[in-house]
Length: 91
Image (tube, rainbow, N blue to C red; front, side):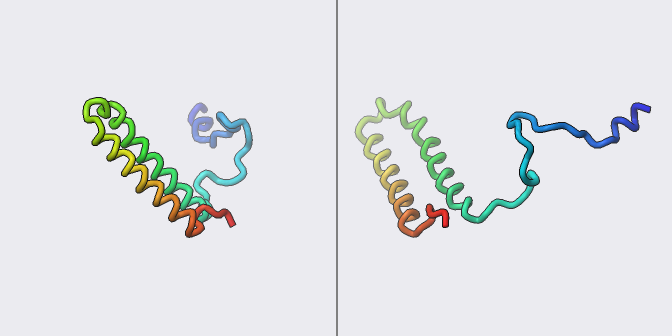
């Protein structure tokens, strides 16, 4: 008797969001979200490099500051290029 109940599909409501989902969980995303994802990952990598830098900047000194501003300059140039090419436009 309890085996039949265990094989039945689980029918529950939404967990944390409180709203019914509008589409299936494995549905495809629109292609315009991929540049946004790449820019997010670039800034995520920036933070990955900044945390250890904060710990050693007092020990290394001016060289560490110059290297971080060089890194941030390259990152800013990449974002400016993406903006100029229209990667951040939604239409």
